[in-house]
Image (cartoon, rainbow, N blue to C red):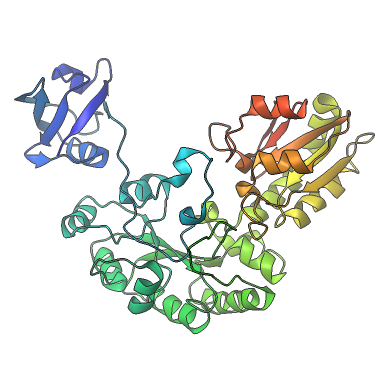
Length: 421
């Protein structure tokens, strides 16, 4: 294996060794290079010996540098390791066609877990890779556990590998690796007493668990040829909150997701509940952070509306967040006279109405369900778009403005910033 050089920084150490774009880095100090993590780790030394493949010929170049001096190479894009499981609750398996290509990638790559906080199952790791993670101290990781019951985990995830999650977690812990974990709960499978058992295991001092996120399964209407799965109702969600609260007394870093609280019709906890917000990308603490930031920013936001927007507002949101968005709109109405703020709740017809979060809405559903008055501007949460400003169904800012014949306001999902576009 080797990695291909995409860019060599001008004036860098790599350039001084005559490394150029198109070269393949085969070995560094005698060790094979498989990915960007290998390259970064193996080049963080003073003495370097590189085995390169240049125009089909192997050459060796050597040099010395300061340990902290960057190597100066950007490799070709990393090929993501994909999932080896066939989970009964896999969300990608129930995605309709016609959305962004990246939404169909079954990412299960430990390097992306380390760099981006993506959750991985570990079932596709070889013995050598586990050793590499420990040797290179690739920590913390974000691990999808779901259940510590070995048979149940195999039944739910349907993997073929000979894999024992608790053995691997304990081994990683002995090697100094920390990890955040998540449990995606399916009623009747891994909730109730199975949840209690999993939390007992994950909070054991034998492990290096630094966080546990408990989230509900999500299903779409596109489950043809897939198993029927039950969803959480109020009673079952209340039971999850009760169990999590019991464990939180001795292990504070266990959290039920915002969606669990919403389904249980229990008020979202205060900020202290969430600690350092390490699980926020998993929908844990987002609502409380949003509300607290709103309290802090509402005067400035109101000024933005009255001085720059100068129109009535229409907050566009999903079903699950409507209670909180309506609270914001009600407070805003006392601050932005003569303008008014209203809320439009969008039902997810594209994915199915059991999908209630804003981040899984499509513009097609929005367009079909809203009607703007001439003096009204729509407000979208930033999680309606990806980092490039594209919706699930491939609409960008310009096309949305064209379709609605209106400018739009995009608000950061945590209410940290906003802009009119």
